[in-house]
Image (cartoon, rainbow, N blue to C red):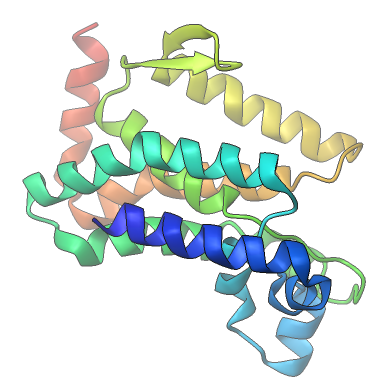
Length: 200
């Protein structure tokens, strides 16, 4: 499955970067280098790099939890593997666009991690099954649609605080992309979402 291939590649690259800081820096998302040096590959390579084992585990466990389901569901809908790649890597790219513009003249800004792509997969699953339970803080089960609202509000709040080193903008825009992505494939799927919401 594609999900396991992405996870395996991400784990290997991240483990290599734990031992080689220069490789981590080379693969990181740096808007200044991307725009000034035209090195566009960094809008993707940063998603295979993580800061530490906790960062890697949380992202890959979340991706595995929802990615295997979404991969099978996309095949069931007849979208195929290309659509699933578009969900994951499209989310990864879309999640960087805000920071690409905001930090375009800051050579010191960089970020790493697959959070934008993982958020896209998570929110795509919420689109198709909004009342499925998601564990808040990995403990409290709440409906996905409620989790989604809380998640987006939290990302916006934390992005304005700028008190940690987490790219909350990537989480937010990746999530928005993932929720909208099914409609890019088939606009009529809005009826699926609305019927799910009203059938609570």
